[in-house]
Length: 169
Image (cartoon, rainbow, N blue to C red; front, side, top):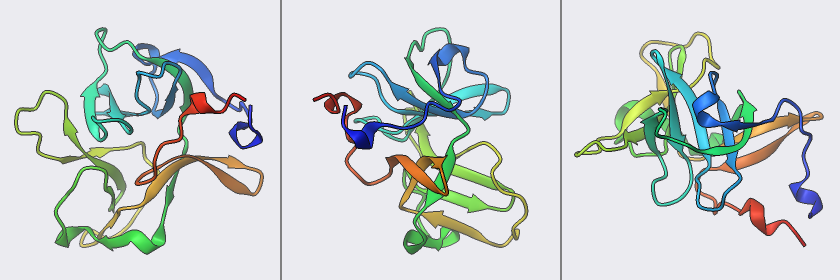
């Protein structure tokens, strides 16, 4: 395995998404599966696909959604400050990260929705406060974990996803 693929195991666990009851990030173990962001919306757990042809499509997790992988609970959301813009004055395109008063959301379309209109899907609570009249969108953002004094990026929007299966020499 290449050194850049190594990371601390931390709180990661091998999980089936149907058993996950808290927000987090899922790295797939099968090549055909997508990388997922898991969140709780209302009373149901939802998965947002981050990779593949269905990126930024979300679906409620049910018994019919088998997907296994390495689950990392509540990872850090990383933002690229240079990509910040006023969210009130833009079209909500899939994949944008929206920071508003007391909320953080990813714009995604619901799987099976005939019209597929993008909508903000709330993530776990990572912010407190803010102003009611302000909302900021980030076109470039990522998912990471703390590593020492810094962060290790596990996934980044807008960058080709490096296959976790290419790391074996």
